Image 1 (cartoon, rainbow, N blue to C red):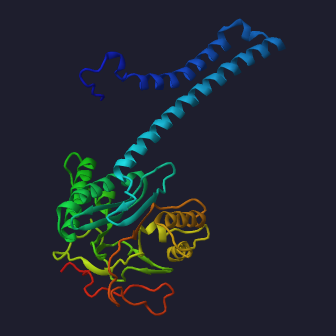
Image 2: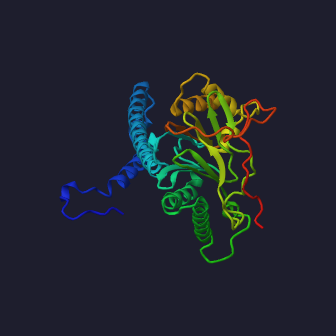
Length: 377
């Protein structure tokens, strides 16, 4: 329904019947042409003539008119497609709005690739906001992919954008996200069972879950993280690529209740000149036509081989390698977010970042002293 503001001249008011009229013309003209063809064949004396000239004239007329109708329908369909893409672009700008290039001394870049052809948004979510508590970031992955996951993405992102500013602790931010997801799933269940019956245990709603990584970067670079079933980010330090942590994450949001003690994990510092790469599991689970998994650490190491490198260049390099690896056909949504620290602060004391794990080419940050619990006790 279109609302018309008072004071708008009648001649400038949008016509609500223009789109239905176009659709009626697009469908009605071919039908009318078919009726004319049938009527001509059975009712026109010219159609009974067997002369070559009459047949040529008749075929030429029908061919010209039919071609005109096909072009008309094609133009109507292209208009509808352009409008659909405009709506999808507007939805994307609201749901996954573009991140600012700089955020409290951090250089930021993010991008998302949907597994559904023609879709610009899917089941991956990310956001980064500067708050009085530090820069807070969320990266998540909704079960499933493509357009069917957009409602859950909207519920989680909307809750994060409010809670990130309101809540002083990351644990309380996660609690808000969990409650928002539970409300969304209840509404979905009611929509599927409007009579009030019990939800089907085999329903997709009953199996819905979201992996979530909550990250907080303080003014001095201190990193605090809560991980619910999500892949750990990678830290790029010079030419080295290492995981931020190797601790076991909490279960994803949705199927299980959160533990009562939601204390964020201390993961050391993001030093000046270092980058943090957050991603969804579609990146590491991407397979080649021969079934080989994509190696994200190797792609990142290749991206930072030539220094200096920007977050935007890292994204371009990784997505180029991903599309080449999957032959341009990823089977899951993929999202990457890169944060590069350009703050001028004192470097952390030796050992703050942990040591490399022996036997690993890339190395890893040491397991935090107080890893997140994996039981709900």
